Amino acid sequence: MMAQAIRFLFLRASGGGCSPACRRVRRAGRLVAGGRRGGAALEFMLVLPTILLVLVGMLGLSNFLTTRYYLTAGAIHAARTCTMKQARTLACVQEDIQRFVPALTLARCSALLATTTNTPLPGTNVQMFDVDLRCTYSVDIGGAFLAGEGINLLTIQAQGSMPYTM
Image (tube, rainbow, N blue to C red; front, side):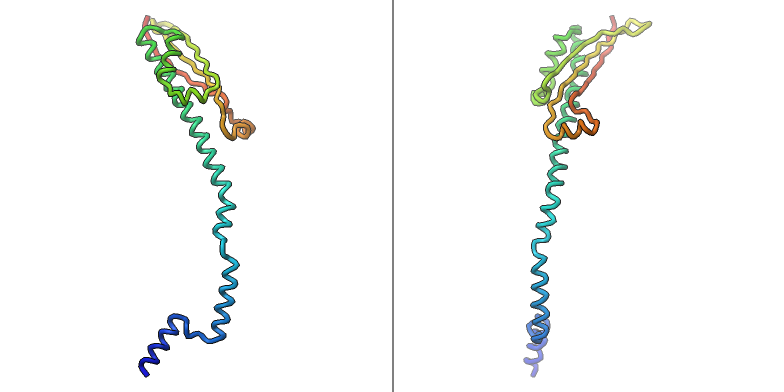
């Protein structure tokens, strides 16, 4: 008697002691649940293009910001270095830019224009050596869309200045 009671409780707990009506309900439940299989995969496929678009946009923006950072740092470095060498010329600036700015950053610029000016500060014997860099940036992906939104990613301007006494 005790063995039958234990067996009955085990079957009830495991769902094996279900009546025929209970089995029909469970079978119908499995058929309904079977229609929901693959729902997560379908949702993922709907969200995947948006995720990829955001990822590609982040990569393009990081390339742009890295290029702008290195050009600005290069302009400041060139102004400082050429002032310290007392060779405040365009040739000195171009040589320092080629040496300081990474080649990959320079490769992103289809055209790089460097200009220098020596500006006296009024009422002092101090002058400012200014270095201006203009990079015509080659936009990878999304450039036409961003230009249509009023964001100009086509020209990067970087400036660096260093004072010196005459």
